[in-house]
Image (tube, rainbow, N blue to C red):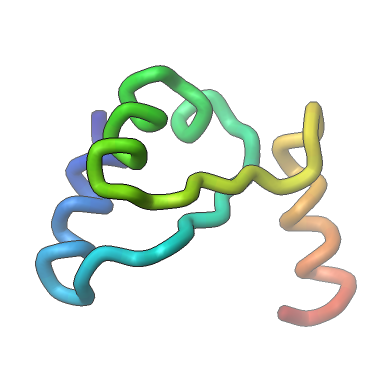
Length: 64
């Protein structure tokens, strides 16, 4: 998965994060991603349930 490859590259440069927050898109909610995070001891947190664009809208409104 591209997500896991990207996260591995980030971990190699920045170290292991305590938590990763994503939206609830299919790329971030699959079993492979969950296993990857469990293996590395990373707490995987998703944004607004059942709304993959909800977090982006909230961030846009608050300019974050």
